[in-house]
Length: 510
Image (tube, rainbow, N blue to C red; front, side):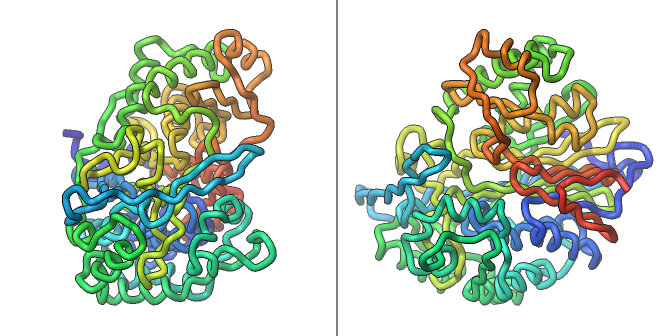
C-alpha cells in the first residue's frame, strides 16, 4: 500500500500552497471546475463539474456515454483509482446469437485515409455517468445540483467549440452524418462545421437537469435502461438493458513506482497504460539515462525503450487521434485529482432521448487486437489512459494525464522523465518536444536539433513532422504550488481561483 496522506504535508513540498488550479482541454471545462472551487467545492467536485462540462464543450473527446478513470490523491487518507471505463456489452443475449457487423466509415486526415468502425454494434457499456456519480458520493462535498449546473447551462445556451475542438468535429463529420440527431448537432447544411459554431443540445440539457435533481441516478434506471436496450436491439446493437443495470464502478489501489526522488502513482491493471509507462521508467533507470536532454543519444535511448515496452501495442503507422481528454485539479486543501475520459471516436449514435453521445469503443482496433466482440460480455475493457500523480519530497506534488490513444504512454513517459529526472519546471516538461514509436517509424515532433534527429536516424526509421499536432498527446497538469499548464497540442487551458484564466494554456505559481 502507498503511504497515507497527512494534513501536515498535503502538497508534497514545504510551504507549497495554491488557491486552487485547473488544467483541461477547453475554457468552458476549466471554468466549470473553477466555479465549483470558488463556491467551496473540493478538487473532486471541481473535476466532476469539468467532466460534465466536457461532455458539452469537448463532445468529440468526452461524453457521459464514454468511460474513464479518476486518480484521487486526498490531502489525508489513501489515494484511490476510480475505474469507470467501459464494459464489453451483451449481457442477457441468447447464447450463440450472432454479433451484428459494425459500420465502417472512412475518415481522411493529413492526406491519409483510415477506416473506423462505428454504429450501434460499436457501443460498449458506458461508465462516465456512473463514475461521476460514484466519485461524488465518495469524495464530493458540494451538492450534486451545483456540480452539474455549469454543464446544464452550457448544453442549454450552447458552447462555442473553438478551433481545436471544431477541427475534430470536421474530421469526424462522416461519423456524425450517420444519424439525424448527430447531424443536427454537428453537420451544418452546405458547409463544414466552423470554429465559431455554437453547439446546443437541449435533450442533453434536460437529461442533465434530471441528473442534478436526482430524478435520474444512472443509465441503469429501469425505464431508461429499457429504452436504450430496446433502441440497441432494434438497430443491430449489442448493448442491453442488463448491461446498463449491471455496470459497476471499481475502486483500485493505484500502481506505485519509486523513480529517482519521486513516487509515481498511476493506473493499474487491467488497463495497460500505467504498466507500460512504469516499465519504461524502470528500463531508463536501469540503463542509466543519457545526461543531456534532447541529445541524439537521449533520443535514441528513449526510442529504444518506447519500442521495447510497446511490443504488441503499437498502432501500426501514423493514426488519427482518438477521442480522449484530460483534466487535472489541485485545491487549497492539498487534494489532487487527475481524470482522463474517452468516447473513442464516437459511434454517431445518441443514447435514447438523452442527447448523450455514445462511444464506439467496441470498434476501436487498438483495444481489440483479436477482433471485435471476441470477449464475453461484462468484461472491463483495457485502456492506455493513465491519470497520474507525482509526489516528491522537496517539491510540490503534481497531477497530470494525457489524451492521445497509444501515444499516451509516450507523452507521459517523456514528461515524467523531464520533470523528475531532469528536474525541469512543470511547463517546460509539458512543452518539450516528443517522439513516438508507432511500430514502423519514430515520429519526431518539431523542436529537436537537426543534429540530434540525425543521430536518431542512424539506427531508426524517422518521420520528421513539420508542425506540432494533437497526435503527440495533450498533457494537462497542475501542481500543489499553483503551477499549471494546459498542453497547446490539444487546446489546453488553465485557471486559478480568484485569478485570470490561462488562455494561452500556461500558468506559474502565484
